[in-house]
Image 1 (cartoon, rainbow, N blue to C red):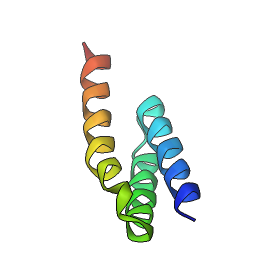
Image 2 (tube, rainbow, N blue to C red):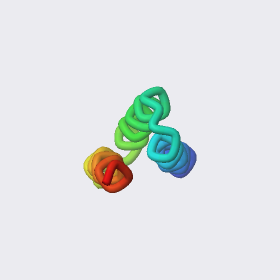
Image 3 (cartoon, rainbow, N blue to C red):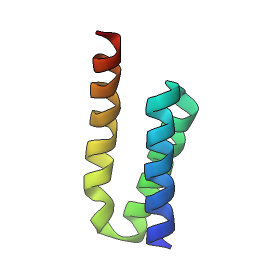
Length: 62
């Protein structure tokens, strides 16, 4: 269960960064929280995924 949720969260984060779509970003957040609730090892994903999206947007806007 944890691996599936984690993989889905990573896939959604990648799609959110590429498409600049907030729906994918929301889905990634929900999946990351569900992965965290399954196993606490997903905590770094909850912290780094939004940071990665912000940095990617800044990088593409330059």
